[in-house]
Length: 589
Image 1 (cartoon, one colour):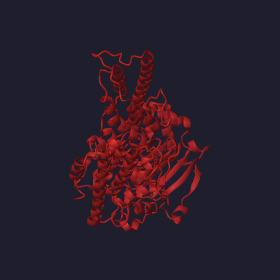
Image 2 (cartoon, rainbow, N blue to C red; image 1 turned 120 degrees about the vertical axis):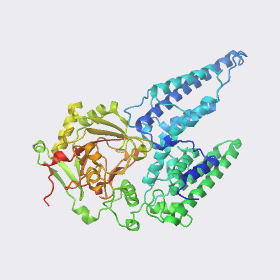
Image 3 (cartoon, rainbow, N blue to C red; image 1 turned 90 degrees about the vertical axis):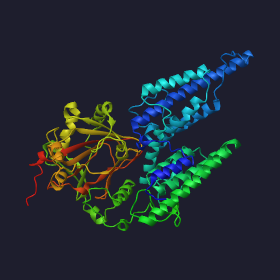
Image 4 (spheres, rainbow, N blue to C red; image 1 turned 30 degrees about the vertical axis):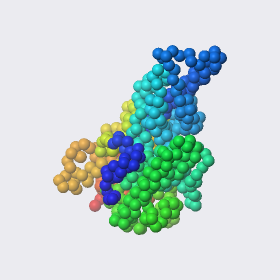
């Protein structure tokens, strides 16, 4: 089977009965806002189910007291809902939310709820995509009390703008979890237990646990299918193994009548495990290891997945991947590997390189900072990347968030918003102009003072872009410049349209603020500069996107690591080239 024929693979997955039913829309990850709405809908369902159980208990006690359990007429027989299924649905919700969701929960602004956790978001998406429709449709319409529950849920769906019974929502979160698993070298068995903690040096994952797992075997297999679709065969093999182990745990707690179904599922996982392992080794045989995403360096038939996974926590030998190409406009496998390692906290700079980096207080040549100099930390000297500490006050941060919240929309990239965009960037974005509020103007004034550049809207800079990243929110490695000089003057024929679209020139520099402390994950990393930045509330990072000549600096490739826990708020000020002629003049040739 060819590793480059995923369509044939999907037909095989469908043939063995694995739930592939996640269409093209499932390629998108769920944002924190969408996840919050799903959580609110699930909370509404559970509220209705609790009320239904109370009503049923009161009815049972009343009938026992009256001694007449057959009180319903033949025309309208009372048919009880399977109360055990309802209790299981409520019990799982309690386990998933762990007390974070109150009776009056509504989405929007709650950064600590389980909707900001990709593991729990996946469970909630599966519950709404499969479990609730099965529970809803299992009851008869003559049960008027149950019909009241269903109608209340339908009203909540309309109010929140989301609906249960959509399989694609689970597919989106499966993709997010797959990305987290790969970038941070997480262990599928840890994830099944609800712990997204990275695999540390010498740590071994527990394959069995007496605790109730957070993810079901079907959840784990769904992530494996997503990994297969992305040709991440090594990672897929781990998910299928975890799914098989989880099914064994679940089978021990199920009735004997479910044994046949459990055996079928395990045979399916054995087949998929064999297929993913074979495809992994076949790819290595044909192409060798060049840092492909989701592929281990050695064949799984020779060195076990666990052995290779544990060795992956050590600093990488990038020399095996060939020389770096800092002038490449596209992302290379070496860039992807370095990106993942930096996201995990690995350090690539040599002691000599680090010894040349300084921390200092600096007025930046601005009277604005004379009485309170900025705290500057050098992260890289070439290309120059600077971190500024405590440049925004808590009040400014909260005001910017409050202004942005009503305007947040699904983020698009420079190539537009389409079915593949969220695979590139998963966040919600709002744009705030200087005339929006005095706080926005003060933020722009701070950027101007710290950089010495003209950043006024439509004069020297763009409007302030505010981004909210939720569960597994990320931005793959990219450049901030649009390549105006390159596309306009070096391409044949020249791209004059690019110049027309950017009359103020390309983005000469980026100034990015961190507006909250991320619970875990969410670093900004520069694979070619070999440095990473931890998000710290009130701090900022600055870098030049263009060389002094005005040419694109491809070494500024950077990306946002996926958020493991919590949410991430950032805001960007992009500064244009032409208005800085006398502030950053071209070098004398």
